[in-house]
Length: 267
Image (cartoon, rainbow, N blue to C red; front, top):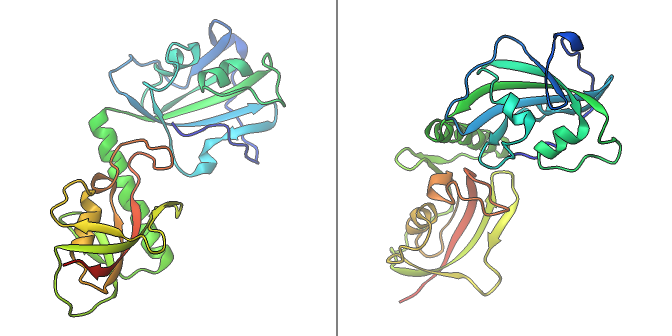
């Protein structure tokens, strides 16, 4: 789940909602914009949060320009807040008045020092969609494609697109050397946000054998097309890189950007 403790500037007006018109569950007052919905078996929610105290906005995730994704298996679903949120219909919203501690504990975060745990906050939650694992995967893959296209445009690439794999690549150095079976490679791997993941150190190139099936498929695909002395850069979608694995610096469904150079064929 994306971290929600993000300070933002700006003001927002909440829909007027008197305490008398709100229901209450263990100290949390709430009202749905329309009607409550039945809980379903979806695992992922696409949401936005706007949190304020009086006229001061504490958090507005709309500023992130990306829907907040909530994996309900990774949250304290037993919290009162999420019990209520689970009844918000797709495309609908709800307004809350709740103690600061109730919000931050549900989000697995600490209440900021600038707030008292008992401070009453206004919270608006918008639920755009509730997705099954299959639909969430489709959503993430479509989002990946958009990010890849944005990256290519931003950095002025002129790549070839392989429709069978979804890989983009651009040859930087090309020659007429022969194909290889085993070769040494210099490499650099970044995520789509240009954060370094891994690279080959000087005088320590990667030894790659085409028979080695342990190399991630996207990297193997690109390495195989390079003769000795050739170099390329490419973007590999997550399903041919690290997939839906969460490896700390490498987030699930993260495309990777690579530079590869075949520096020596090994006989």
